[in-house]
Length: 261
Image: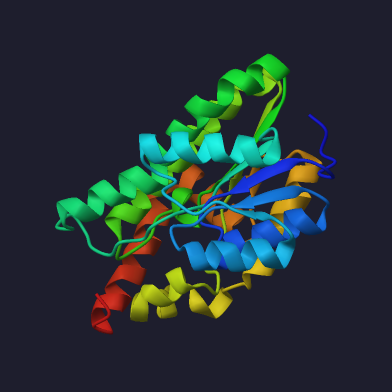
């Protein structure tokens, strides 16, 4: 598939704000035809108007919601060349997190990706091209203290992206996993003191993350690390897991002493 984005039909879920809005603007600036999805119809409309795209508000997680969204996107764009599975939720809590929090995290952070791929793959495989950009987060490579549902489901999102690429790369489907650490968004603000302590010091603007994403798309790179230091953390996690877990546990103890957890 050509990495030239001019004229490509791009759908961005969770595109009304944060990373999603920045992705929509960046793809539009690269010449793509962009459809902006968000549960917040007003936010989707504002971003779509700003970047000359189409607003497609609605649910991007449930089977019925996705079927409706894909149908409307194809009607608006003619074809979906790039799907940005960006919508996400970050409930706080550990093993005692509410069942509803776990269910929401699985639906939005993992199953939404699998359901979208199920709908998109038949046409992509027939055409011999298609592109799936998954907003995973560094939590999918590492973990996120204070939020078991987020950490676990983002690992699932990464696993699905890896599987999708390994299974269909030779048939023209290109997959990218976007894994930033802290990003100055409403989601980071919602994490409160924990996010402020762990992520805010090195947080990037959403526009920086979108720039990294488009560079990786053009270079056909699977793993996108807007925070380069994550690569070293990931290497230590893989090669010396006891050292890595010990380091994370020291962070946990520090948060507990600070009464943030």
